[in-house]
Length: 227
Image (cartoon, rainbow, N blue to C red; front, side, top):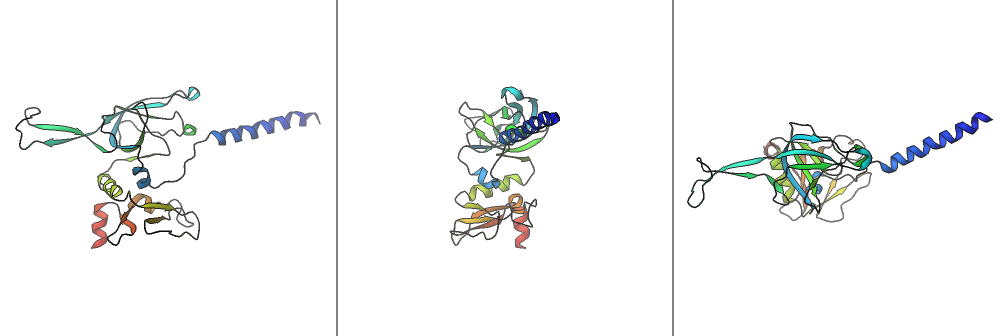
């Protein structure tokens, strides 16, 4: 009987610890990348990670990633009143959506339980983060980050076209549209879990008849689909 006096409190302590861990774990409602892009408080940039300063896990201090907010070089053909350098080039930092500001860092939670994300130094990303009241840019597991590739610009253009549409998440059958402005997101239905076809390759855009429907997000895929 004596051993029960020690084991029972230990079991209860373990169960309490698991409940506490679940309570503190990061949880996000699934959202299509287009839904994240179309939010009003986001900043969408292309950036390269050039440094990292880990946060203090027990103190709530975020991890800081130093980034190089990548720029685009334009040639000034008719340079009359303004010239930049001997070759008449002007450099514009690339912000696809949100405040036009040159960001030098992005912040995230110190660990996964705090919704922190892990970025790799020396890697270019497409980042959809949230602008804070102090002017800093924050990124969490509930936001969006993805390795940059040549199709991202076309995808973002498609997302911008579809901000007037509504993406409805489907988790079980039946799942029905309630209006012409909706697209059914079916990546989570039985048999499709883990594939992410619509999230990776499609955008919900209003067609010529006024109804929203799924279109290929990348121009290359759209062309291939029409041939």
